[in-house]
Image (cartoon, rainbow, N blue to C red; front, side, top):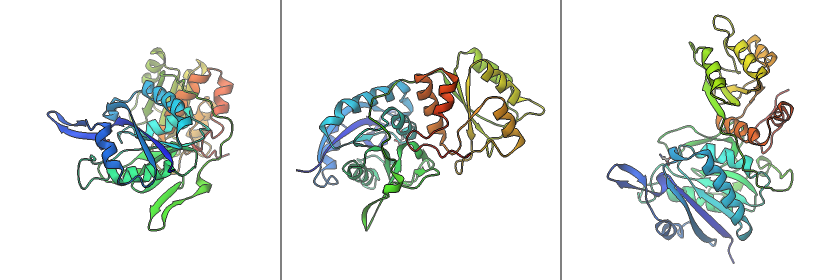
Length: 333
Ligand code: ASP
């Protein structure tokens, strides 16, 4: 008998149809299943409807619900494919990587740039890649797109219209499909580091800020006053932030002293941040910020939400950010 794969549909372009007000999710699971038999090989597919959303409408509670659903279904299949809109797909794949650490089957998230109903779409190719990765026997959370498999916590949407919409950021691909078939890179697939336990708590008191010349330090005070507990900042380059005319960094020190967790990364997509190089970085470290190193912004933000859902103890929080939980970060010392 072929492998059993469950497909969870959450919506996005892949299952969209043209409606009165523009492209919106609308294909039923029966429509999708009918098409997928062409790419499923000898796997047995079962479809489960979760929701039918443009992924701009995905919120953290949807991640918690999806993780719970995957936990419920995991014992009766060999792998799970999640169909998802591409716009927030990398946030979902990152958060599921934390919530489903040490899962014992592959969970593969995919979507497409054109709807399955379009004859020139990438939808079938992406589903083919996702189904075959889900049947690969390599446990973990992945993104399958454009004949490549990316570790879920390393994916980022980098192009808005090309079929090559996702990159694997600062990390090798886990698998690629070519005339050689699906070639897996087992070195890029993190080993399980413990026993699986669903951990789908999160904090929604997390804010994300992109640094820009002219940003006012008063912004930081208002983030604190609004009750946020965590702040992820996309700094410049290696993680730089201003400390002269507008002393943003001392203001961050105020925040960390009042119990806010401040995580600093970079707005550069590739090669990551390192606060130990420049004066500005070292000043930030003196003011109690944590480093995101080479994490994607999607992974940094969702890790912060996930960690703050587990603990508010500053030492424990620091410990979580000094290790890689599921392959999301390379720590530079
Ligand atoms: N707006 C769509 C979504 O994220 C885009 C897509 O799926 O490609 O749901």
